[in-house]
Image (cartoon, rainbow, N blue to C red; front, side, top):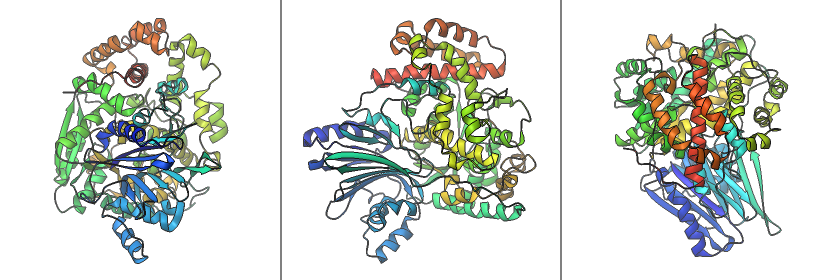
Length: 639
């Protein structure tokens, strides 16, 4: 697990300039790879590849960039490539040399053997940058679900890339500037796939590759999709549920076993949900020694599920590390640090909690954990999936205002794309309604004709949703937007790697995921029970209390739930939303923002209060991002 960055500027070949620029870009990725740093230059072509290493596999044999013997190929890899020993042996039998014992060492010889189709042979989470000097070709590759991040910027001088946007912003050709359209998307939580908070900087989409080549003296780029989360156009009309239960069980055992392999100890994240509890249950029997489990606890019983997590830890004999968090940890300097690492706004301080947890994991001398992300996407676990298929059954409880809409919303772009407006989009449409009146006159004029809800719909491939079951459509559209843009970024990699800690989401193993798309909807959600097929596959692994439990809202307690938290947020408001700063950033009308915040603290309707909390978080963070990246203000120290 590492950080990768670099650039290709054909007109810039001064060695000192290239080395100085790459060093600055690597410096801000040090948290992703504190164990080692490497670089490779093709000076005549203006190519620089950089790598910072977090050593987990092949501890003394994993130096990168990895080069061919003649030096005409070089590659950097961020992530884990599972099954590498078998692949390495196969390559040796075919006379392809793997230089080193790390998992990353298989990527280059696979490319030399298979060309661009080598990506089909890779299993795991990864971002890869490969330079082919013979063909004068650069290839950027991102894994199937976007577990590992990879960003890029293309301009008249060439291509710049990095595991995090902050490294790209250190390149002299890229000016740090927040994008107004992206600001609006962040306020409503849903980004356009492939976008970032910054103008001119893009996210390489999951399952895609960017190819840059020299043609007629010019650098040309194109992107291609090499994998997608494809649902069939029809399902088995008379399914045998037992067959699918066994199929999930077999593939999940294999996925967890694969992700426990490392040359350092591997622990587990443990919440009170069936996903992480299933992972821990399987890991316990797969490992020879007790598993270390890491659990977050909150100071609000409505949002805390550590008691269920403890049941699972006790059942498995796991050594549980419990991290209790209050407003002191969720706001202030830690909130600002988490925002800097996220590089975008987040609606809930769960991101800050994840930052603290990865910090605790490293303090316990662990570098890797297996996690439960992706289960809801595969098996229909979120309440909005069930609502899209089976209709509204309640008002959402703690989900209302943040995950579920209390009223039915529609949008013509989504109706045209899907035949309905997915329920996951609807609460964010209501957030957007609250945000628009707060915008400055300049922002209102600039975005008057821009429809952010339609822009998200336009980024979805219609061929992958039309003719599909409603549940399939709901799962696909969520996975293309919120899984990558939220759960795997500010809820995943960015907070984990902030403290040099690798997370391995076993459910997003592509063998399991591809099988899950074939499971009929009535087996995924059976008799109104979400993730029924997973529950049955894990029935003898989970405590009865958890097996029978409905989906729980894994969120940190919002500020409105506690006057102490409100005061902590108000302190940040007083610092970041001053009249001069709001005017300088230019996104909001201070005369509208002040009354909104004052009214938010008086709100008694829980649904509206949660929505207000979301708006305040996003507003604060847009100003933090401006201060951190545009003004280059120093980051606070967290005790």
